[in-house]
Amino acid sequence: MSFSKEQGYLPVSLATIMDNIMVNFNTQFSTNYTTQSFQGTNAYKFYYAIAQELQKNEALTADVFLNLQQYIILTNQKISRPVNTNPGIVDKFLEEGYVASVKPMILADAGKINIAVDVDDGAGDYAATKTAIASLISQITVGGTVTEGGQSETIVLSNGQSFDFKFHLPNEIPIILRLTTTLSENNQVLVGSPEDVKLKLFTNINSRYRLGLNFEPQKYYNIQDDAPWTSDVTLEWSDDAGSTWNSTVFDADFDDLFTFALDDITLVES
Image (cartoon, rainbow, N blue to C red; front, side):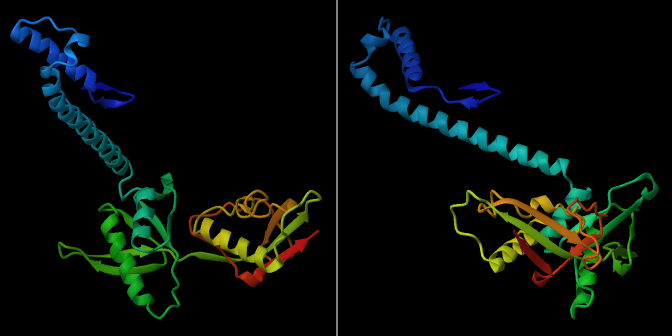
């Protein structure tokens, strides 16, 4: 079995195995078979079945090494993204059913960590949710790290010590949206109804946008994927009830969250 960095372990071909058997056969029995003359002999027929099994085992062994290589790659990815890093913390919260965002580290925040979690503090079960989040933070933050935020809960650690673990609620920014579409003169497909267009936009944003992400209008509705009947689409947002409109990217802080309902979307067709 050979090995290359590009292809990994490569099983030996059946022809190579039979040639090796022929060489050893010639040595053992003082014969002088060639590749061509060895074929068709009783010895060839006998060893061919054995060679097939050897070749099959070579292929299975190569698969084992390939799976091992993939396992090592996945393990290395986990090592390079441990749970106490910012991306690891976000991933861990997602595993537990929460959307979270972590403030990028700056020198002024050395020894501190700011985590925002998208939960409703007005919900009836918020007390239990708050405790669950604080407990999760206690498990994934490095000892000695000070957690910051307006929500605080005391958690008893396994060694019996009690510490306060804090997190932030979202800084909710209510917005309204305006989507302007221009019908293409070349259009030959069915035009979406206003209700369908607004619902599509609403669904797209909810699936692509979350707490702490920049709000990027151009990502949520486009001609190619969403409105092939148009020649131009423009999505704008306003956080002052429509006094000013913006089609630019909103540069969000880690705890910022745009909030809106389906009824907050206005469609303008031209």
